Image 1 (cartoon, one colour):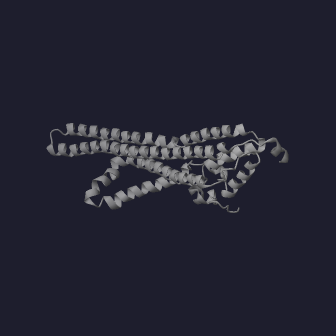
Image 2 (tube, rainbow, N blue to C red; image 1 turned 45 degrees about the vertical axis):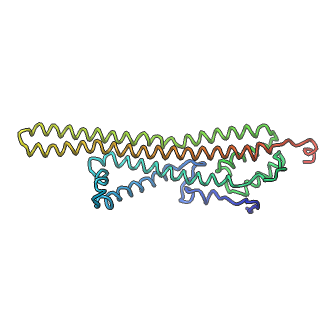
Length: 293
């Protein structure tokens, strides 16, 4: 592959995609390998609990935060909720890297800037050649995949009217793919509060059991005091798990919203690029040019 002039540079998907770099199968465009994200999420969750146990718990100002995570009654639901949150965070971090990679394709110039340049079945071959010289795998880039599909059809069939139709169809497919890539994340946003509510039910069960012991020990003040400690512990578990789970879900939902906005901005930029540099450059070959070709 030779590097072109006019700000035309090689963009290697095999070297730039984060999943390829760590040896996992890369998903299409901004899709994420969920197994890789799960592994990263488990390590992040372990780091969170290590932070709580060895850094925050020994310090008095932050001890109560660490105890919220480390209290035995809370861990039944807090550990899976933390893993889900970290898993979702890993998916979004990988997505962010992939969005940056896809955005870099917008800086390429497969279509010459020359105002006199027009796209037809003859010049389409030159543009396709420039695309394949610019990147190693055009189909893995949203923008270049659209252009390659449309221009290949123009080169092979010569129907200019089909180009805009193919670009629109591919744009719809890309939007559907982006939407489907958030299915797992939306499931996590739903599951995390549910785990918090499960912790609430368990905590309330402990509290009710503690009240029963208190009533049975009504004749002994010391036993009543000991039983009430169990009651308050159960109530603490009930409300702490829900609070943390809701915070997890809120952070994840806001992050998802921000990330979706970035992806939609990328898709809009691809649409604008195709309209400006492809659709507006389309011209029919006159009969004399066709005969000479």
